[in-house]
Length: 184
Image (tube, rainbow, N blue to C red; front, side):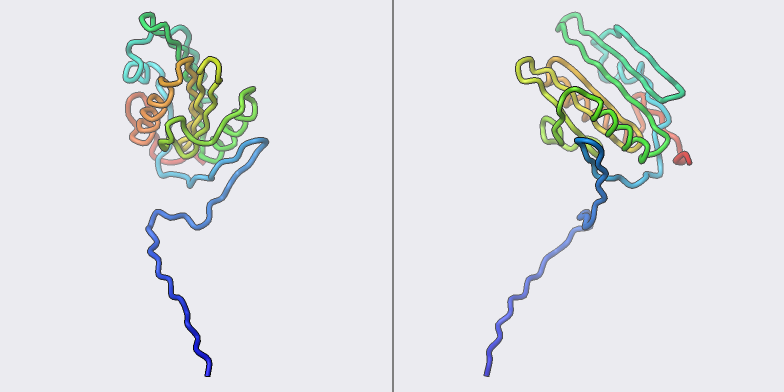
């Protein structure tokens, strides 16, 4: 007579667990593919972003290309002598934005690390690069159909701004204009 003893394992799976995640890779970088949301961003209004998050800064340079959805802004705070560069690009779809962020990452001279500086979640995917000697920091993230790049010589300025902009993209507020239906 054989005695068979088995081990029964019971586990709970929460609704937020992802069993299979599609990964898109290009060059040195990869990202977790994101599902197309019901609402996409139509435009990023640089003036409103500045007024809501960087009111103490003055605009040194701002360029907006409506056709390509790009917005570049360089801001400077006279009191703290700090400069922040903010770039956004709005794409017609999440898939286009994913290719756009991978192209951007691969075109940079710095090497980027997956994740944010603080470890806090930012965007659907996020990367950062810090230059050791100077502390200059860049964060690049994608949320839905928007790619955001933030650069500052003082890294402590970058992460909180990225967190706030990400929340604004999700909520469609503080200079983030939403459109109801994804573009085809």
